[in-house]
Image (cartoon, rainbow, N blue to C red; front, side, top):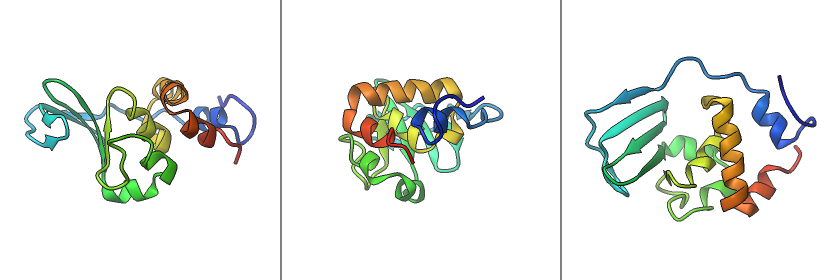
Length: 131
């Protein structure tokens, strides 16, 4: 059931169905990330991977998906530089979720909206404009 006015951000986030199944996790990964060598990788969908290292982590999105992401989200964070596709786990993760909400569960989408509201108020304002 969708919540909010037609065209609103809340409506866009809540009208999507829940994704089916759980993302595949790999514990034998040695990918280099901005936070060190990854210990695990969770494959959300082709082109979106969540990496965890011994100390930190975050999402990496493919160049193709990065081009689909709104420019104002690509440049909102130090890792979201519009070229590399890295989004750290403390706050920038929320940009990935809001850019590609169809791949994430409803509660994750709502958490992402709140995180963006708190950490990236200009992105929140742009995202929440009615379409």
